Amino acid sequence: MTDHTTTRVIALANQKGGVGKTTTAINLAASLAATKRHVLLVDLDPQGNATMGCGIDKSALELTTCDLLLGDATLAEVRVPLPDWHFDLLPGNDDLTTAEVQLLQELGREMRLRKALDGAASAYDYVLVDCPPSINMLTLNALTAADGVLIPMQCEYYALEGLSALLRTVEQVRASVNPRLEVAGILRTMFDPRNNLANEVSAQLIEHFGERVYRTVIPRNVRLAEAPSFGIPALYHDKYSRGALAYLALAGEINRREDGRRAAAAAS
Image 1 (cartoon, rainbow, N blue to C red):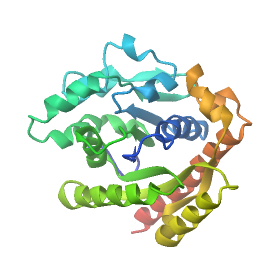
Image 2: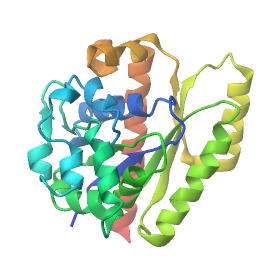
Image 3: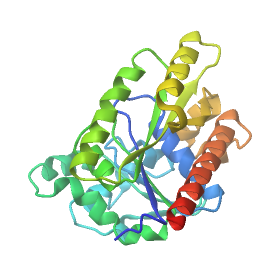
């Protein structure tokens, strides 16, 4: 079994695309690794953007998370170490669409990722799972395996509507298959403080969710946007850029929350 007192499995999910989910997955993995934490990034999105953003050619892969979910390969076989960025990757590509279709016929289909991570994931402090931008069988696998959901979202008009749908899904998963699941935090991405609507939505988020909204805000940033085209995290593209510094701040905030959670668990 994965020891959830030491390994924190976080699913990055939002069924709305284009909210900075994959950007967050890659840059948070690199930033947590920079704080000397052992990190595994799981690409569970058939688009394979997290894989490409880490500099891996998704079309040349022999094994992917698809093989892991279907039980055709182990975590150790699928894992790709990324020594330059100091974390490991379970890469993904459009084979994951095949996995999703095949899983629909399987018993215990939502438990596949959890079983694949059990035991092997204990080598890591954090396992970050980049979900597809929809609530499907792959996302359900991530939510069933996770301790927490990190929700990246833009502060715009329709964002709150999408958020309530995702929170209902989290509730259903918690009630049915994963009582451990909680909202780890809501992350405001691509934030422009000059935009009145963004500030209004941000204020509403804090009013409704309080402490669950991360203090760190990810700004709109050119360096963050261009880093994936070079296949490198922003931290190694331009470590002094506002985007890279924001993700380092987020990593610090997550580590502090995690240390507090562990201390509370140890005390009880």
